[in-house]
Amino acid sequence: QVQVVESGGGLVQPGGSLRLSCTASVTIASMNVMAWHRQAPGKERELVAYITSSGRVNYGDPVKGRFTISRDNAKNTMYLQMNSLSPEDTAVYYCVGSFVGHNYSGQGTQVTVSS
Image: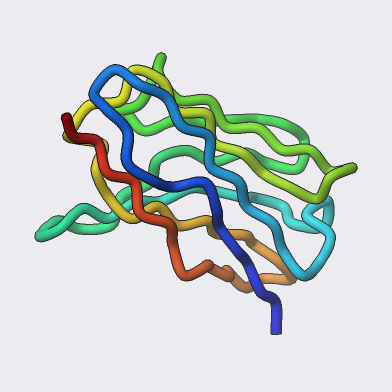
């Protein structure tokens, strides 16, 4: 069973920044695609960003220009740098990794943007 663990969430003021991290029990270099999803209260889960093993990235429209996804295979960690945060970014953020044809998701980390 592959385990994925997110960290780095917390409370931040509007306009602030946070960096989320994601590690896995397998080498992330073996994951074809890794992604961040989020789910706000009362809303459906949505894709925030993904990064492929070759480094190709894509972002959801609400976060373009503000969030940056990256992966450091040497540290076995994927990151989500979030800047210019707004209350609309408040959600539980999930890391998802694709490994051997299956998607594995962590328990999520709460991000709350509030003054």
